[in-house]
View 1 (cartoon, rainbow, N blue to C red):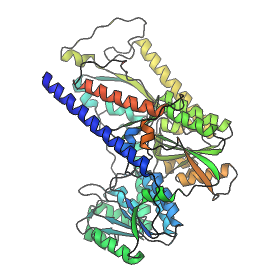
View 2 (tube, rainbow, N blue to C red):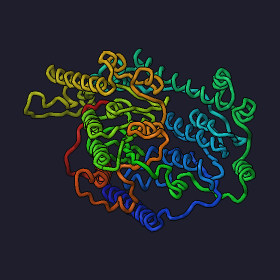
View 3 (tube, rainbow, N blue to C red):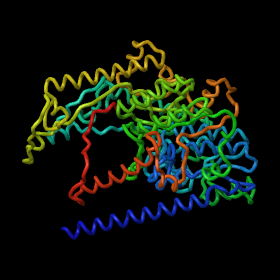
View 4 (tube, rainbow, N blue to C red):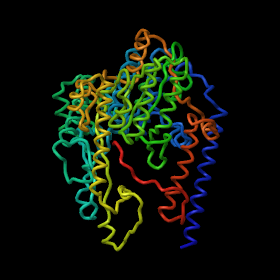
Length: 587
């Protein structure tokens, strides 16, 4: 066994060295090559969305290495807007397929493609299939923004409609003798239900169905409008799906059946054989953003689950974390920069820590007090803590399909003593303080402990709803009616006053212009905080203050998490340091 552990550790060390060598090679290549190449005199831009896209490129060495060739949403949108007025660009050709793209991101990209088409330049989609033996709803919805759609002869269209499925572990918990001891404010705050129920509660089903039907209606309307169909026809086709390619062609969902080489050849006949191919994110790197001159608007990202400390990136899952230290520091930097006139705060988060959300909220308040308007642009989701950080903004912009709201709180623990008793494992303890056992899974809440949990839940909910009422200028009675932990689509959130306008970052930038007295289409310069760095700069970053240390702390914590995982699976016997306990969060 010892030899096995040594061998496994040796393999892990070797893999880490290979990864580090690859990262150093990438960093050096980036540092040496830069973006000095020019845009060809005649260029056909490519959007390869088979691997999807990311909201933004996290300032984390691991994220930079893992996502180096995955385009960001902003790169694609800036590229399309820049290309519309660039004489060198003769058209756009996209490969979408079963792109893993969220509803709101798809809507934002659709809007950018429709703006590009106003230039008169062709925009064409090729797809091998829209959902091979699986759904392809959002991918096809996105494709309908293009002039023409071509499907490989062997492909299908998985326009099967939406289904939101939720796992319930209530029965599993009962079999394991694990008892969730949790609380929520209020009945629509449904994240807890996964652990306590075996099916939807009535409020849970009501809220989820409302969002689903809202998004489905948006999808049907968008497809019908761009494919020159009636909405009833689209709904009927959905009920017949998945559709074979020939059936999709007969129904008018695609313009032709062709292979990739045939679509590219047809496109070249239209724009000219001498056009060079160039990926959109490389084009915008060479040509530059369309927002390069004029008054400066700061752009700050808040992406992922809200946590205390620095933002981070999990290379195992590809998940990002919105750290209060990092986002607050970025907002402060934008406020302190004398050239920045207003701030666009891009939020894409399902929520998380109440305390961390409150720390970020405070910086949006300080920005407004400093005379710098904050305009929030919401991505796929801005719920709970994701809405908390946004609610003080001067204006809030969401896509029709953005999931937002969830103004509520939940918290608690799992009581596991009976489970451990069944397998003969026992715990004993000594404690100082009546409530010292409050967060232990081997003790039930005492009467006092439960009262303290309820007081915490009530305080968070009161604080949340009170700040919504103040930030949105709504009577508290109206806020309490639309709160209760309920999620809403952006379309519905606009009607009840939780957001101000529907759109994406371009809409938020227009509102930022207006907030500082500019014309809606005035030239502006967009500056991202923190400034983007090369992989080499990220690797050797040495922060000199708490506002600048986030990237180094992220890297250190990533290595610590890998070490803890090695300990968990038994590859090492001991990992020094303080163990982190689970704490209640406002999710």
